[in-house]
Length: 214
Image 1 (tube, rainbow, N blue to C red):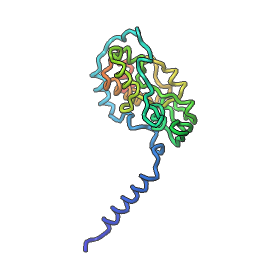
Image 2 (spheres, rainbow, N blue to C red; image 1 turned 45 degrees about the horizontal axis):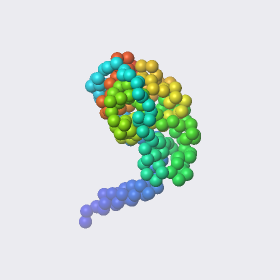
Image 3 (cartoon, one colour; image 1 turned 90 degrees about the vertical axis):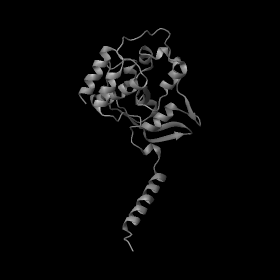
Image 4 (cartoon, helix red, strand yellow; image 1 turned 30 degrees about the vertical axis):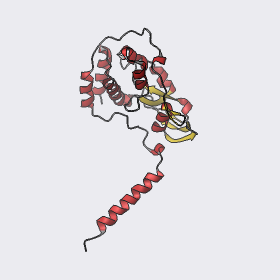
């Protein structure tokens, strides 16, 4: 009879995986969600090179209401709740609302211990998107952009860093946490490439500088 060790080992591993599947909550996963950029720097640079360089467009007729958010995700949840759950640790709820947890703010390194201190930042700000191509979209497409959970467009950060950033691009604002510059640049490029948004000359130079120091 052939040795049973491989069969026993395989069975044990399956049992262990089953136990882990039951015991782990989604909030026990790493704080970096699956949408964070994972491509290498060369790929990001090539992606950046495909972007159209153009002057910033007009802000005429811009309104955040033209980018409807946050969309419902069912059971009284919305996209903000989803990002808080994805990016947080030890998250607690009241119904569908996130009421506790901890979040590491990429931009400034702050550890936030309350959802009231957390903003969900649009990596490429809505106003910047408007100036770089979104003004020509439909409101439905702008809503897709504002609620994009499939790309590194939404991130939980400190309210103070989000408000400091405003609608600025990397040529005028960078995270105070310099160790975040590489990821910030990669994520910015990934979003602009996905949504076929333009970059200004200064914006592209700032992104190349950050990617060059990864």
